[in-house]
Length: 273
Image (cartoon, rainbow, N blue to C red):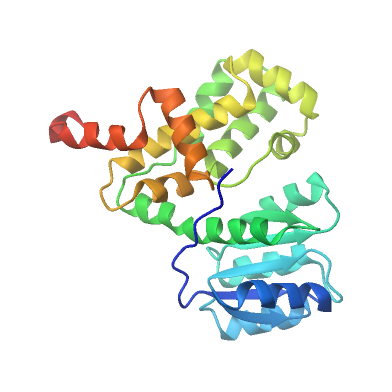
């Protein structure tokens, strides 16, 4: 897998909420050359700082803090600046923690111990996701979660499991741009990973990963018709941190590369697009 290319991060400000001195040192050494880094060692200090300094671009938030939990901090962050991307850092490795964090508005999560490359990749990926909001403003990208979920449940058997699957499918369409695992989505449905995989395949005819890839590529096709976005922008914005992987999946599902798709869509008359 290729490394995530370095983005243009001049002026980007990252608030790090962490009380472990060793982890703080790692963060400073890794990020200070690319970003302006602000460190707060408690949840309350972080909340107080953010209230007076809303021009933060991303938060790295440890789940375990000396005063209040990272989840409580996350809830306050969303009140102060709802669209601020927040990456949760946890040593627990618990999917339940991740599910709770995503429900409270986290953009991504990283498990300790993490590699420097992984953390940088997640940060660059999350910073790139404002592209998706820009595309929505230009009507290049649409949110079809409710419509698709309703169609999904209409084809499924009635009952509680059907409702849970509807929740899961809606979650996929609302969060396809993030790193959502099978464990995480099954958790949102309140179903074990094994049973979720079986029910999902029975209803959609696809595995979870195949379905997620199709959702992402369909959205990428819309973004590639927007000349304001690069192919790399489109790949990042629909959930692929690795451009080579994005191009491979795109060609597998469409038969052509993203570049070929863009050229083809550009050559069509406006009324045909």
